[in-house]
Image (cartoon, rainbow, N blue to C red; front, side, top):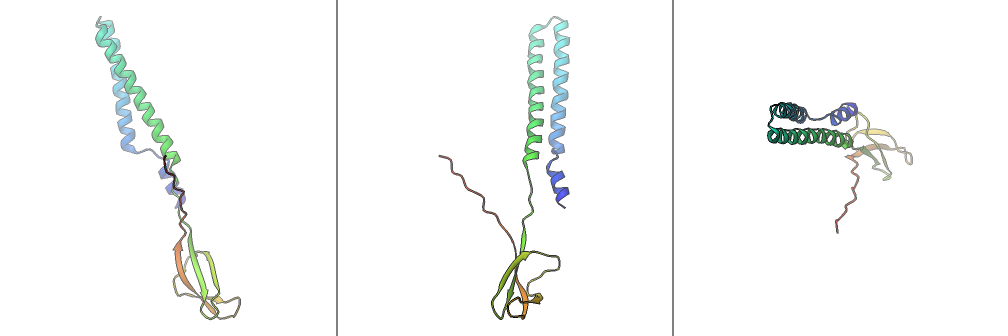
Length: 136
């Protein structure tokens, strides 16, 4: 599952890629039209089309690189799921990673201290607190 989520996060959106390719194609058309206008003697139109073509090409290349960079920085981490095991007789507690088949109130192996059966009392995901930064 983690391989699918990591490959999905490294892809660029298809809609964004289509828009970038369309803008890139239109910029190439604008550059070709500027050459055509220049050969016909219309330097003012050729200059405008040349500027529009280069700006559109630069913008589409910039958007493509930024979207690839952002997709590479996105990481989807699956949280750790923990299981709390407790002995009802002596109160001994143990925490371990979740294992397939765990459920609350499931009887497990005997307690290490009193040899009474231990049960699962909680299953939860571990949440990491992110540091908050405040701009001054």
